[in-house]
Image 1 (cartoon, rainbow, N blue to C red):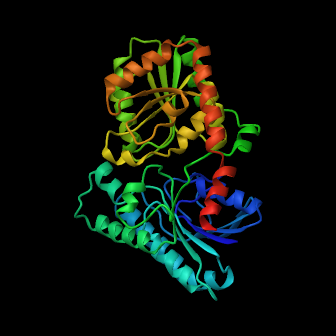
Image 2: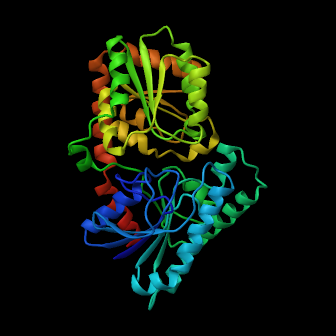
Image 3: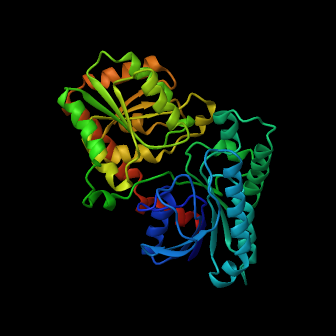
Length: 407
């Protein structure tokens, strides 16, 4: 097959997030399919800017389309989205003629790329391409419930219109969220059009020689170990959905405990969190800049417990599919999970402890309980998570499941 993958935020390990399109496309290329990824030259998730034009990474052709720089979630980001969609539309006829995709995947988190994907699919001759909508988040529902954006906001209205078009026009819907069946059914998507393909891991990447930790991160962990502390780690995005204020509140409650928290990452609320740590003198929390993906295994192997939290919101009744949790489990980390959702891989696998979301008291109690476990008990939890993710979340398996949905 010729597969055209449209994902505004697509990246690669050496470039930065998102990684899912790269890993799926790499598996498809290994199976003999030809894959082309259309992505923006700039996004807030990347570690570096990508030059406009064509780049081949591990057998996958990426085409970086010119967009614009932005910060935060305001007009600048909306303009960046508009420029990307315009760029895809502008190259649609040439892409349909020269690449002749058998399948076109709209996969940009926001649903508006369904319009440009549909346009390309219909231009393919002699037979239109299969149109696939890959569901990341339930926009606009997640915007309203997570960011408290008004239901009357023009951007919400635009997303709602695009969402309706996606469910109506897509030949297949592939969802990362495992509990969306009832939601998409209200939009006319039955079980024959819906396939669940969650986020995953690439085992071979974990078998390679990993980069050593950056000196500042290694020093912070070594300092805690020298003080006899159990090390709690967080690695990933720092945005409102990650509920990291709850972790800081919990850290204040466990100041008397022999544990320390090391947070590595960046995001929209990072500066405010960093200011909180300083102004409130939360001395058992250390924030450090994000580490490259190649150093994540080294970071996770150096800590005792990995933390991940969510906000307490009804949107998660449709399920969760976090990349960082897959990394935590693959690394064999015991996990403290603060969530209430339609699914919970931590509870399902037995790789850690689940506590109530957005409850500093519950998280503080969870931190103490995890710290009180012996290293051997935490290691047993970690092995359970590793076995679970290997069995159910390998990208080699997920890529084939996605292909079956397109066949």
